[in-house]
Image (cartoon, rainbow, N blue to C red; front, side, top):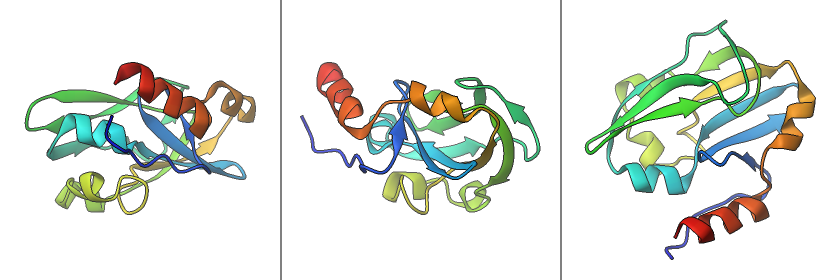
Length: 131
């Protein structure tokens, strides 16, 4: 299995999104595994700022050369910011999925939902199962 980056300080979904929770704000994006499976990303439909989202509700799509994938919100809350740079250069997600390639920021409405997400260790186990 290829070595994928799985930062310890993030939470993960089984659908390969990540969330960095800082107080009541979560920065979200897709994992290194997800971007490598998608291949060259050509377009990202970003969620609308101020929209309310539910945990694991679709918030946009990611188009790659080979496929289109839904983007899910790891947590419920309100979208407070989107990464506008991705509109011009969606390939940032391929190059830096956990840094410059973040997709949106959410003000978390239900902090208990963080418990539903996977730890880095659990996410690595999931990747081993899909490999």
